[in-house]
Amino acid sequence: MNRMEKELRSNRKLTTEELAERVDERPELIRAWIRKGRLKVYDYPNLTDACDLCEAPIRKGKLCPDCSLRIKSEVAHVYEQERLMQERKRRENSFLNKRK
Image (cartoon, rainbow, N blue to C red; front, side, top):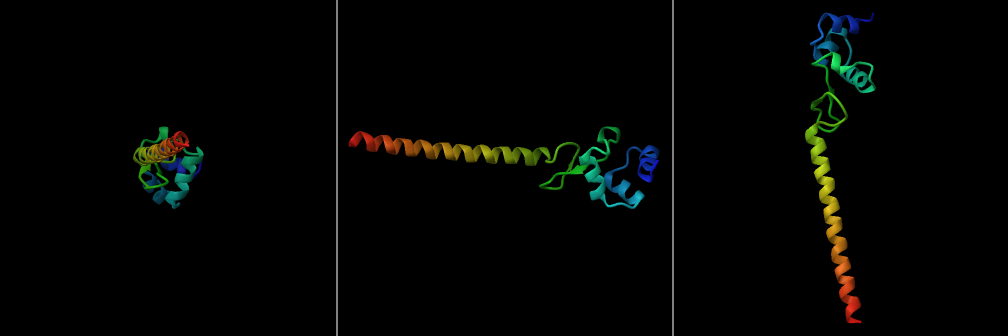
């Protein structure tokens, strides 16, 4: 059993930073192990990864709910703008075709 497993078994409520400090590893390495599935966060309630955009603590995925929602709304806005632009072009073309 390695040092990390021993620390987690002795105190399963350690945070990612506390665990990194106790086993003398970088928190980024522990987060990478969480992301790869080598450490299962469901067994340890305070272990977290970091959101790829804002570094907020997350327990699954690569983005926190706030960043995910923001990206979804930005994409929806871009699609809506594109749809409106296509609608304008269609109207302009239909107007020109009727006058000929």
